[in-house]
Image (cartoon, rainbow, N blue to C red):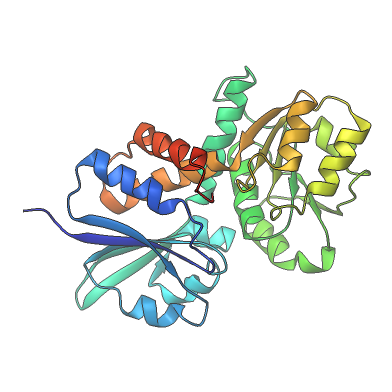
Length: 295
């Protein structure tokens, strides 16, 4: 008999999320009848009641903004990586003596590492290559996951360019927990171009359109970048920064690649099965190319 299990992505807003496309494609490819994955618009205030209502009919949750910090205090266990990063994007539901046990983890780091390795392979360096130098744009939760990913790739002293040093305290604390030593600087659209062009890896974690001034400066000054750019934003696609980077001859990895691989790791954790990445990738490509879709 088919086992019925539920999973969902939580966030606010969340209607635009492509996680249901990815997870549903995985369930279909794995033959998991009775499994369903939905999107639930959830605010920080809504979150405690929703978490209290979880039972063994649930396999897990994907957690997006603005909930990645708030969920930490609502689960029973948080794995060491998520503790270090200070952000949970995945909750696993398991049995306990009296009800369920909830474990928070972070698959964004896995998604970032895997997407960047795709960029290295596209650049001809091989997917096992590392990063000697890196620049991170932005100072939020995804930037913290990026520092962890860069550490896995061998770069423990990246430059972090933020719009306000005064708002980077949480990221600096996360860096200290991870044992990495980034150099924090104020982002200047033109002044920062030298650092961007010379780095092995550039990861933009800035919101949609926030990096457009950097893109404009890059287009105006020219000069070929030497490294791989990963822009985590995938709506619009390509972003202005990704387009400018590619036009200058650089290697670009779209944010949808991170989305794919972090979701594949969630599928593995929630189902106990190897994720069918090919089927998920095909479903993602179809959703992104559909005229009515909003990535």
